[in-house]
Length: 488
Image (cartoon, rainbow, N blue to C red; front, side, top):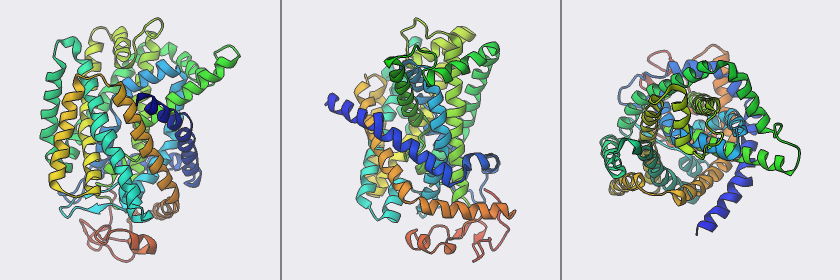
C-alpha cells in the first residue's frame, strides 16, 4: 500500500500538479492583468476596513480571512519550510516565493467563486467552497462529492492528526506526556468547534493576528542580529534555485528539480493557493462584492508564504545550524532559533507551534464540516464527524505519521487537481465579476455586487444569496436602498 501511495504522490507532485499549478497561476495572473500587483494596495486597505460588519449575526470578511489564515499558518510554515530546505536546499525557498506570487491570482479566483455560489444557512451565516461551485456552476455533483471526501480525509482527519503530533513533539522536552497533550487539545478544540462557525471565526480573529505578528517580530530580531549576512542569504537562495552554486553536471539538474518540487509542494501545502481549502472559509463572509473576499484571499497567500514562511527560512539559513546537523522539521527550526537567541528560542518555537497548529485544527475542522454538509446536511453525521476529528487529534499526538503524511499528500493532490480544473473552466465568470469590481473602483465607487447584472450567474446561484445587505435590499443599480455602500 505504501508503495502505491508513493507512486501516486510521485505522479501528482512530480509532474502533473507542478505544471498545472504553475500554468493556472500564470493564466490567472495574465488574464487579470497582474491583479496581485495592481490591486495589492487596495487589498491591504480592504483588509484593514473589513473587521466590522453591519450585522453582528454575520461572519465579517476579516473573520473569514483570519479563519483561512488559521488553517494556512500551521506546521507547514515552520516544520514544512525546514523540510523543504533540508530536502530541496535553500533554493526551495525561491520556488515557494514564486508559487505564492502567481498563486495569489489563483486564490482570488477560487475565493470569488466561493462567494458567488455560497449557500445561505438561514441563520445569518453562509457556507460554500469548491464542492458547491462545482455542483451549481458545472452541474457535476458527483465531482463535488469526490472533492469533499478528499478534503475531509486530508483536513478533517490527516492534517489535524499531524498538527496535534507537531504540538506534542514541540513539548516533549518539557516532560509532558504526548497523550495528555492530545487530550488537552481535544478538549480545547471541542469547546470551540461545538459553537459552530461564529465561534471558530471569533477565536481565529483573536489568535491569528497575535501569533503572526509575534512570530514575524522574532524573525526580524534574528535578521537584525545578522544584517550583514542578509545579501549572502538571498544570493544563496537564488543560486541554489537554479543550481548556480553547484559544479556543472548531471547533479545540477537533479538539485534544481528537487528544489522546485519541494518548494512548490511545501509552498502549496502552506499557502493552499488553488488547493480549494481556503474558499471554504471565504464563503462564510458577508461581503458587499465577491471580489472583496478575493482580494483578502490574495493577501492570505502573501502573508502565509512571503511573510511567515520567509521568516522561518531566514531563521534557519542565518543560523547556519544546517551544516553538519541531522535535524529536520520542527527540531531544525528550534535549534536554529535557539542558536540565535539562546535557550528561550526553543520555548518561543514551542509556543508558536502551539498557536499555529491549534488554530489550524479548529479551521481544518470547519472545512471538513462544510464539505460533510455538502454531501449530507445531517446534524447527527456532523456530531459523528466531530467525535472522529477529536479522536484523530488525540491519536495523532502520540503516533508515528509517515503513512498519514503520504496519504494526506494524495488527498491534497486530488483536491488541487479537481479544484484547479474547475476554476479554469469557470474562469470566464471570475473575469466578468472582477471587471465589474474594477469598473466600480475606477469610477470612485465602493463596489457592490448586483446579481441581476449577470443573467447566467443569477440563474445558477441560490435564490437567497446576494439579494440584500444588512443595510437593506439592493436596488437595480447595485446601491443599497437605505444607506450608501461602505467597504466591508
